[in-house]
Length: 263
Ligand code: SF4
Image (cartoon, rainbow, N blue to C red; front, side, top):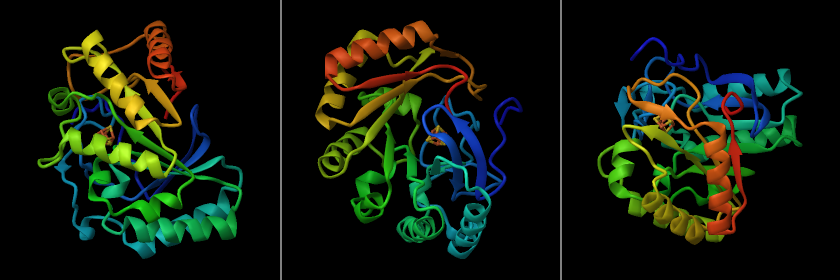
């Protein structure tokens, strides 16, 4: 990993961070603090390259359910002034082997200690193909899922998923899920050696967004150092233009988040 990318979060709890999308957000990291474990290895990831590309990490590399409970309980008794409690962190939160159990526990702690604070999930959508998570997702207040492209080849170039993950399955799962629960789609647009906003690619993606029919679409570009060369961020004007285009095409509220403003 290059030294200019962000260091991994060093614990289960991090922040609160000031997030344009979520306000004062207290992060929950369910993954390793010593190596990046994720089901994707996105070319724009601000944590650098994925050291372990997997959808099924071993529990002995991750914090235990008890440790997570203890840390979250402590944090909720310290940080009273937060807007969101957010599952995010050093990789895809839903690959944690006992994700459902953890969500149930944290919802219970939240209900007891900070009942007005909503729970958010920032996910790369890769686990939705497993059809296992509906009861956990129902307990989460804001569900944000990544979809950077609707093109399988581009998906492999941008998100570089672990073997066995196919974009078509992820899209089908997002369509199915959004018929049951309200979801938000988030997309990172990038330029450079790989770009995901050419007219044909965008048209295909807009069609899929219409089919998913999320509550809203959040778009942004990378504004931090990334490990890969040749990634160029989109400027704010281009993002604004894209947001207008996407809302017109899809009739779905599309919000651009500009450099230095997102977490
Ligand atoms: S899904 Fe998120 S954490 Fe995983 S590689 Fe992509 S940007 Fe990084």
